[in-house]
Image 1 (spheres, helix red, strand yellow):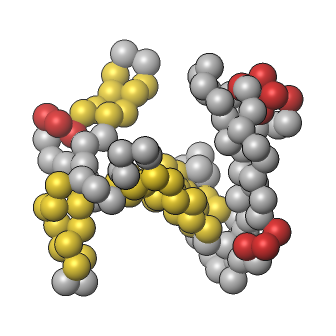
Image 2 (cartoon, one colour; image 1 turned 180 degrees about the vertical axis):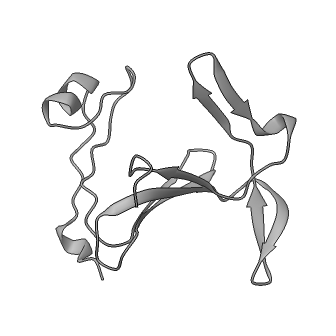
Amino acid sequence: MTDIHNVVPFPPVVPADAKALGYAEFNGNPHLCVDVPDGGFTITAKTTEGKRITFAFQPYKNGGPPQCVDIQYHDGEQGLTQNGDPWPVFDVLGFAGNKGFDTRDTAKVGIACILMDGGEQ
């Protein structure tokens, strides 16, 4: 079990400060830098409109470093059921240069998973 008392995010910083601290810089918006510990760990967020999203960092082995991130938007339309509970679905856009994918053209998803291991297991 992760000791959540040792996980303290920095206050929001400008992108250049995030980069100087060793975090990725993405755009010109303020950045919230968080050190994610080994083992499973979830970051949950809510917008001013009440839209909720979670980022669940998952290891491939118990207590190991996270190797993927499961992203779920909790206020999407109801479309699936998991263990008898309603499970919202949402659209995902993926970008890869001039290629990509758009679930608005196919089927919505219930979880988007980002693999952080470069394809190795």
